[in-house]
Image (cartoon, rainbow over all chains, first blue to last red; front, side, top):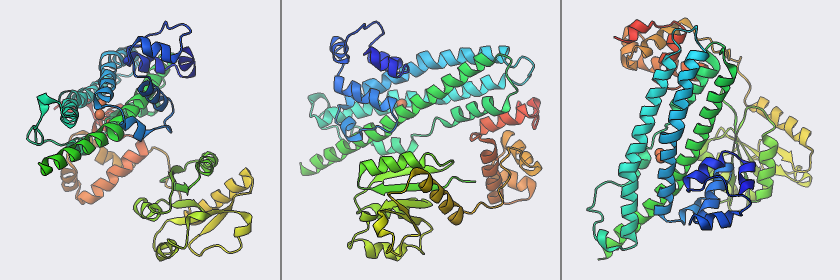
Length: 237
Length: 200
Ligand SMILES: [Fe+2]
Ligand SMILES: [Fe+2]
């Protein structure tokens, strides 16, 4: 397990999403996964595709249960909102004071960042409150669990297609923010702080891209298949 | 200028990966790759219209040759480049615009590809790549930052909405800023607009 971190330290945060913290000594990946009751197959696919953006075993990932996929996705949401965003926000506050003390307009960077955060929050909220529960319900019906039986399609007229069509690009503002810092603000007085902010923004962007890729290429197609199967079943009866 | 786009297609993963690796040495191009069975290849090319497709010679078979001949080299703007053995270079299909010899060394192949790009995508007198935006564009940027719609800006400046959109694309392209709020921050930082104006 330690070797994973040596290979890519950003994986520490991915491990956290599975409830795994540092301090595993020399234990192997399978040992640590067992101790934390983590599905090792799923863990490895997530870690590998996070690390290497050319590696994306779409079919294999679609084989895992929606519940499992959504668990991971919502933990990732929590990581963004509860850890990463507040951290970057603090850095940006600090940067405005320490890097651009002579620029009277630098505080607009903060305004812009907050706009981005609000966009991200409403994006995530919609997924947590609407899309994810809907998907889990579809899976339950698909597996024929009693409590949700026969609710399809009356349960809602919503379909996952809607979500795909409005799953908008939340990286655009992040991209702009980077460019404003890189190109359009004056030379920062505190170079190190500025580099730190940039590297955090780049890492966040990569993380979110990975996350959206799972939503769009694993979760959505899987739910879609189940929707089709359910409506076929209904036609038969 | 837009980056030239390449699609690479072969049945063999190893060939694809190798080609991908090699193309990455060329500056400023965009690469997509497909592990192809020859079935969906043609529709994929026509849908995506990349500038170039490098495909391994065995992907053109007696089955799909006729289909390909309908589109290449004249109907679709995409140029097909054949990746083949030295022995095949003598009698290439007419659909190809050029070829790459599988057995050549790295430098030769890269030079050849650069030449191919220059021939088929000649650089127009390169529009100054600097992020300087023109006075007209500044004026439009000002209005965007003030919250006017494309239609309103067109009416104000006596130009068509279409022209406004074109200007906006150019601005975004030059500055590398896509969102309205990002453009607003840029406008403030560069004194194109005063803070008091937007708080209204
Ligand atoms: Fe999400
Ligand atoms: Fe999302």
